[in-house]
Length: 338
Image: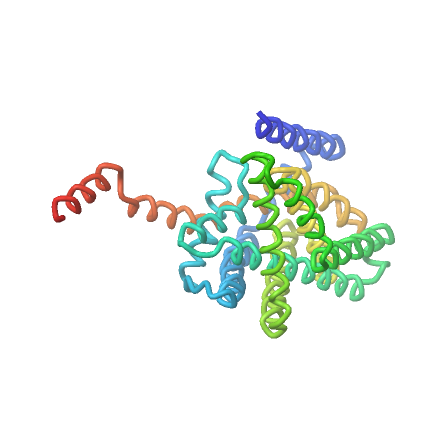
């Protein structure tokens, strides 16, 4: 029941976002821009989208190996592509990150260290977003970006850095010891809550342990920065595809912030949130609203197209998985051999 309400709330939120957006943009304007899209620039943008999961796999592989989890880069590439695909087609509210952790656990690896590595990657990714956006701000300046958009970026950057500092401090787990003491002897269900709190401490310890290897964190940060630069390039190419090129400095300032907003768990795949962020940031810089919305909407088929390798990997995994009858025959042969 709770999951249904959450899903319904997200759908209502998306509908409300697009209702507001289309109250300001006539569909006829949007159709005109879509008819003028240049496919060559769109194809170039799609290649940048396709390259991003490979970068994700490379940096996650580095973090996992530090924890003794050696699945191999090719296997992690498959996990990343497959999770990206399944989080769209599986009719449950499970994100790609959660699916990746489940796949690592299914490979008989430490869920604690896998989660710690994923959080570390997210922190490095957030710092890369902030740095690239601030570089764009310094490069373009308020005259190009608009004063309101400029101050929005600075405030968001300050909030994100503060949150990261809190995550890396003892504050996130200070509540665990008193909670576990309170849970002791209060029944199986309550004690399970205490165990989950204990897992949070273990994940936090696994995360903080990365501080002993600054060279690794530097490499992961550089890969995250490269991934964000690919996203900036993607949007620059898409604006060219609709015949309305924007400055690279402008895109460097705005696109990382737009990506940050799409990480909020209030929508599906950033629907509504991404469009609103495009209109807010690029609109403040003088780009036509219909152009902003066109570019934002084009990103979705590109993302879906980049999930095709994941669909192939998921199909291959399904074909290789033994059926129930095959499992029973294998058990029968094993018992007869005994």
